[in-house]
Image 1 (tube, rainbow, N blue to C red):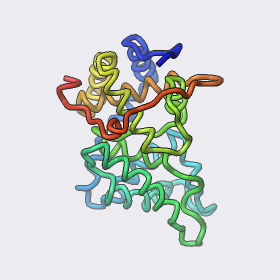
Image 2 (image 1 turned 90 degrees about the vertical axis):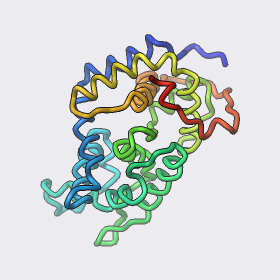
Image 3 (image 1 turned 30 degrees about the vertical axis):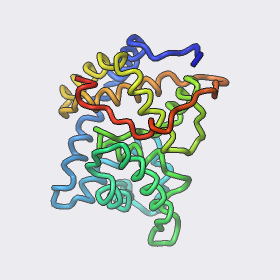
Length: 246
């Protein structure tokens, strides 16, 4: 594959450096801890909604969930009860990327079918982005965040990437993870330390996957990108073992 951009150790270090300078670990670590504790809470739906609301606001997809005009600001978290129920039933604690690939489009599709009490749609657009980001907080070991900037970087690296093909996006993500573990592992260690110091003990495996997500996000191109890459069919469900990121 011929491309002007390559994933290197320095590129990975720079991406995690941006994460560190933005104090992102201080935002994400407490929410990861809350999300993973939610099923054991007295009110699991409310507990998870308390995570979904700030994530939607921070990642700027809250506008996809239009609220009733009369809903008080203090009740914002109740807007995410339906999403919380779906995640608790089919997205929390997943242990394989194959399961994530099935869960995210299903949750997004169910959100599209959901109606509010006044009959209006619960969500506008196709909420693949929101579903994938929420699911990452519920299953950081295997979650794959669907992001337009990261998709742009995949195109920059030479992959044909439709705007709404989450399974293909995951397939490319897994392929890049396998191909660039050597370039990502140092950045993964640094990221693991940042998140752990901020209050959530993230595994090296999950941190290395997050490092790749950051590399893709921070290296989205401007302008045209190539589309000449291909993958073998068997790459779709490539899993990274703990030994790969030890």
